[in-house]
Image (cartoon, rainbow, N blue to C red; front, top):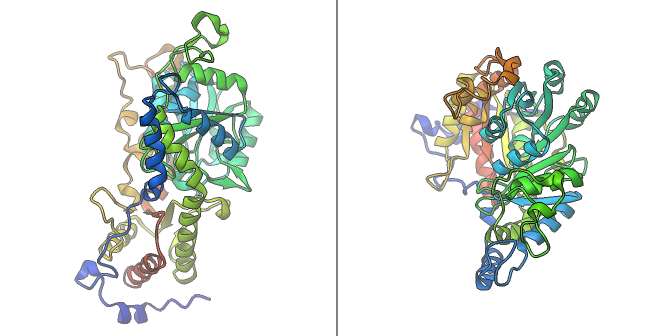
Length: 445
């Protein structure tokens, strides 16, 4: 039973800090760098091991340790995938996978309206067309809108597991199978998340992960691709490197490798230095996820029990949630903005200058399709306007990317707010976060 009493809370907590009262906490929240918060001697020792061997290039050198090889083997086991390929960023992973799936002019890639700009970048660089699909309350792609938008030019569904959790991926799979479409999973913000015990990234044909500094595990930059297809792995290997396979000494095989895998490369290799960090972080990942998930759901349940006017995103499998973000929804855009501003004033801001753990969705920039002005204005890298000006893409002439294209995404972006969950919160931090929500709700809702 809800027993939220605004008058009582106002009396106990006093005036909102934004209106001159005392804040719930005077110290900012710990920085929201999930993997970085767990850096320690293990990462230092692993990195120094590579430096001492003077072999930072993964394929050959004076005495290569094989940290990238070990990372790939352990990540494949972690995700229960047949193949894993380490790369130097999540962005190049997206490009590599779409190229492996033979995406190009005349094709459209189906993408959600809540994502990161790297998804668009990869599609555009290959000369293909992004086709916007609305989201649902899971903040992931809507299976219903996907079904409506498929055309004869649709080739790949780029399904993004956003803000630490997944949506209705099984329904997406059903749609893909009916229409004979390939699925690429973008798990950059959800490394380690699961649905019914199955890791994200393993539902479709290929999956990508990012190890950039904001991610669940980090090597500063870096990423990895997983697939169960030997053919797609071989294509991805050639494309991520210099367009060819390598022999057992790490040398390019050029004309001696299978002609099917003589392609065009992108120089997306991971270094042994990044591999050394990522390997240690992978071995800590479950502990990092358990910490974030435990903190997030303590906070969410405490708010759900007391404040019925705050809604939450739909999380399909709470036990498989990576826990890195808490998304809340409010009755209007004005209330969402005011509530978030008041929370920050109560101390739900960051200890560090670059840390911004508490934001309204309106402040979430390039995560929303309509804020990507290169997309909305159909900008090109060349004077010729490609890919939209290409004859093969004439089918997309009337496609619009402006706000209003996706009504559900537009609504959620206006009424939503986001709290990044640091991976090292203690019980006192959690209590302060809940108190701040109660206090602000007593005055704003």
